[in-house]
Length: 201
Length: 387
Image (tube, rainbow over all chains, first blue to last red):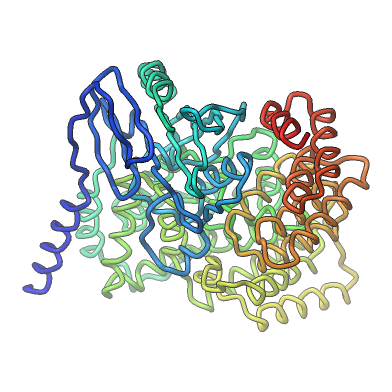
């Protein structure tokens, strides 16, 4: 019985620690890990896990902007927990990737079997489809942009877009995604405004 | 109605109160439903909830033609039970099929990718129908009910029904493996599946062939423990030998059947590229190589198969793989039909190998062959950079 109580307490502590803590992002210039800045026009709720920041207004499973700030050579896109043998099978970023290969890296990471991610549920999906991969200026730095759509494990339809660049061998991405019905269109212009405000020297 | 896991625990109490372990379990008859007060009805109720959840999952393949094709195989195998069996095709790159006690079957796309003809898929489906007909899950439930395993069983069901059955592959695996049958049950299902296969006019030699191919894949794999089917269906050389002997015996009596390979390839060809891409995403390249080898042997749409062979080498990226990938892409281009993406992949590898003129030629050809390419502007920018 005592042992069971211990397990229950441990489970509660684990669940609480897994809850995201949000802080307010004011509509003002915001430094992103010292590498670049953005200037949102509205207030967002921000949570952070390592090199990933998640900004949302109504909740990350409805619509959110993910900032991946400096994925290094040989690193996975998402934080991972689970058997290390499975981690070895997850896609890894390579500093010499072309934009086409980075797109493949992102899609494969989203669809990786056994993936267990700590990031918002709107970056994990099935049947990920991409379109319109094209050059994009990430601030003043050459980068890329593409659109994507996918289904959650529960069958909910999502839409989104990704912009990114590789600078000093590190990958920087901004991904906006939301439910196709209502939430994606609701915040699309706001998200577009964020990427239009990127300042990367 | 949202299923609440607490119902599972209430149901568990009811199930454990019912006395039925001593009764003889008969085969289920066509159209038969369990008595409402029985533990079997409780099992069916839980599985009905799971079935409802899974049917709305993002992993389900809804294509009407593919579903109609699988349905006609099931009905050909067991016409009397055709209306009792329901199924979903689950987009998961592992070899598996499973049967729930209520007649709800999962057919995974990894199984369909690996089946080389209709007879092989029909054998696996027949095997699963054998579990249903013999009520193996009910027998198994009564065996585990009084053990600590019952707790694990109910936890899995509660998780599956309460938070979305198809929440992850791990959950799918857990659900598929709930009824890890005994070896005797597996032998029974083998016998039934084999009998159904032969009676439906299929080539019964294919029963052993599909297990044999799977053993070959497992032996090649980097991570043999990832073979989900082996958790619930211990596949051994002994089983393969038994099925071979049964086939030889029937053949000696003058019986024969068709593999229906052409029909199978026609039905699955539109989906194969998607399934192969998902197969490679597992990044167990040694196992996927075995799968690709068997597919290449079918010589069906070889341009596509050699492209994915090249993709395997490109994604594996071991020393020497870039050269092997280029050779596979060039082989793909030697056929009349090939995916336009061959030219893009070839261009990328030439670019990395600093063969700039070859890269330019490949990218230019890609844009000509696929003027509506989803990455047209990006490839055009590569060309500008190369110039």
